[in-house]
Amino acid sequence: MTQVSRIPLRKEIEKRVYEVLLESIVSAKTKQQIQQLIDDLLSPTERLMLAKRLSIALLLLKKYDQRTVARWLKVSSTTVNKISLVLQKGTGGYQKVISLILMKEQLKEYLEKIDDTIANILPPPVGRDWSHWRRKRWEAKIQSRKPF
Image (tube, rainbow, N blue to C red; front, side, top):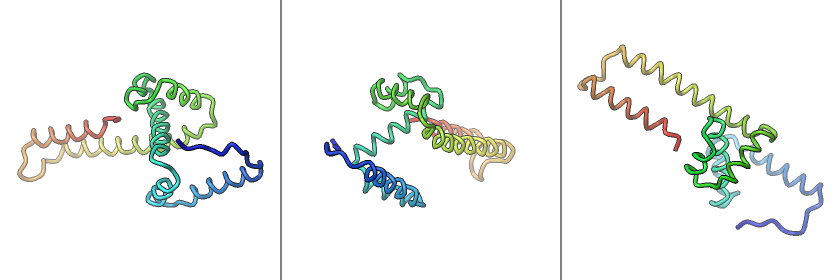
């Protein structure tokens, strides 16, 4: 497990080290650059831990109950409770980031509704029957909506 030195840093050095971390994250412009930074910066265990925390917050903000979240993500109820507490009393960091994710999901759902409406008006692609085509579209839609 990753450990921090027991010898504390001076406050101004600790502050500067943290600023370097934040500047490094902000300077990564593309998803690929962010991925490379995270891969170099964090161990596989640390990456999974942070991903699970964000996923817990996302599911809680989507109104899933805590037991379900704990079961799906294979985390303790204590971990889910801690994230829930941060959502209630934290600085709003989770909410700001997750609200962007949720807006993208809502846009995707809206575009899917438009696509469904058009698909119900227009005939299926050449060589396919309506029932087969609609069943495949329905199965793909169900698969894409599974949270995990």
